[in-house]
Length: 567
Image (cartoon, rainbow, N blue to C red; front, side):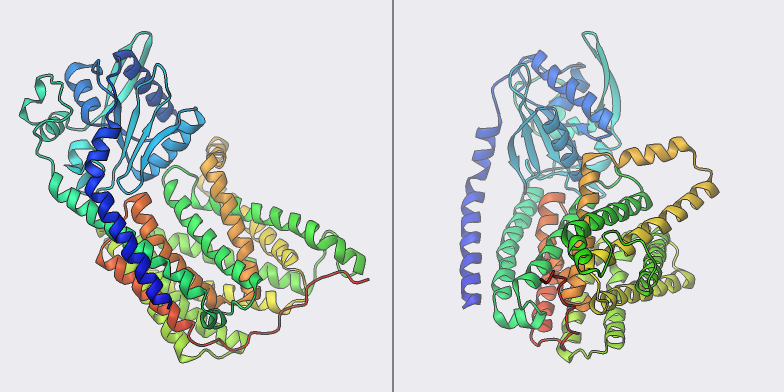
């Protein structure tokens, strides 16, 4: 029944998409091209935006008619209808937020095509932002279906303009002559009222590729709806341990927060603080949030019972265990960062998937449980799907990085420590008769102290100045970074409840569900590749989830009694 419903949904979505694709070109050119605007309106838009983006460190390049007239005529063209810019997906997200803060609303948005239009009203011309979704060789505008050699656009050349009393620099394409020839043909030097000329951009091939990718994204979105059908099946719920509303909410809350952290990390890449500063801030926020939750949920009740003081400040055997666990977490984070620097981020994201096998073996040994063959098979297939998803991102730069035996010994230590810390944390959460919030306080406060000591020692050794430290801390004040820290902190707190109610192994299954959901979203929001390998990866992960959930896991230890006040 679920399969039939899923097929009907997929067929309906694909049929609707075909109708939209058939009329989309006409809709695009009739609705987005606006009336002619005065030269002053165009100058107002471009001058204000260039100042805002420059102050915020948002990288962009003028393109199409704006780049042509600035290069050829030294000014914008009176009667043009908009200002055209192109930038990376991450910079486009930051630009959208910055414009919103300045009161410039978005009037049109096409997510699959990678196009946004902003209009501030009177005395402003519309601002068109195209999202570059090309590769290392090509800059791709999938909205208009055009591609240009990246060397033609990047790195942009700053050209100085003086309009009235204002002087500023605007980035033009690296090779403006070649760009103009490609976009407008050999007659680009002669002014024309036409919006486009006889350029030689790769229109048909790119438009076909874009439509194919968008169609696959829509189909995969429909297939992702299978997750809803699958998780409504009672057998799947029992197989994953989702036997009550609390465990189900924690499972999907973890998946949603995991997905959010991935997108936020990608959107501020290259503009936020360093990883050590980010981990330090997240750990501090988690400690403060745990203290607040402890006060609200546990302290009054425990004080009434006389079991635990309102503020836990003493040393107990459990405290010592959590301090040791925090130290293991910190060492694991240091190894992770060092490995990424030596082997490359792509290699890390491929190889880290093997951690799940260490985790399962340690989980069986430490928790005294036995996994069935279906669980091993399901996790193996999920791992294969995750690796298949990451392999295309391996770059030649990663291949040239350090591949010595010492680096892979470091990876082995990272896999072991990461698995041991996660499973041991689960064991403490399930066996210690203490509130989860109290355990989080000890764990995250200890981690914050260890990271602070390590960062201070490293800063002293490297001769970091106070000005450099303050500049790094100021990066934490960016709105997107604040949001990222908050979401990471929520993920850490939810993870503790996940491990108490479910298990470390089920957590790997939840990570697999996140992979399924992230594939089409990565393609639509960030222009990530979306082809047969991504479809195969998602299908493997989905098969692995089904295989894992086909049989319930061995009964987990009894959950600690809820800390409720008794009369």
